[in-house]
Length: 180
Image 1 (cartoon, rainbow, N blue to C red):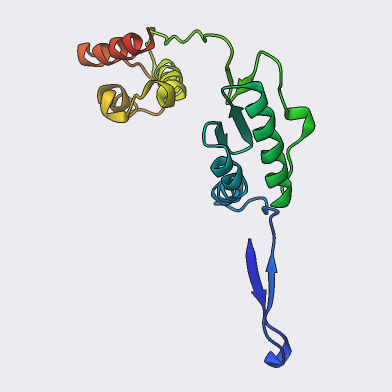
Image 2 (image 1 turned 90 degrees about the horizontal axis):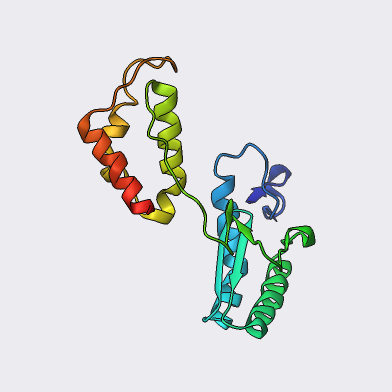
């Protein structure tokens, strides 16, 4: 965040202020946060190209081929983040299994399944929520589930009945196949 304040009667140049603290309620705060984190991690990513340094909002994943590379990259990331005026909570650092990142346990296979019972809008929303949660991992797009998305239209009462068409069932089956 940066802003300028004019002096009285413009007697002095504008006073320029910069802040890394994100004001609550600012709609683009997540975007600003991502930008600052990208800037902070960039030097470490360039220095350790074999190491995966992945972040999303306040989650950070560092993975390396060897323990030594991991430790060096970890130390570099901590230093760069601190240099940028940010911090990583020591209590959030996970060095032993199971590692969790964005709700996933990295060290073990995750059971992914979608509910096939859809009788009302609530059931449909739950099904689409499950699919939406898995979409980034499975590579599913809205183009893969247009019939399911169409069923969101209509009566907004959560108990309103919904009956999936054969085309919508095929989309559910396709998602299920991708999961397998």
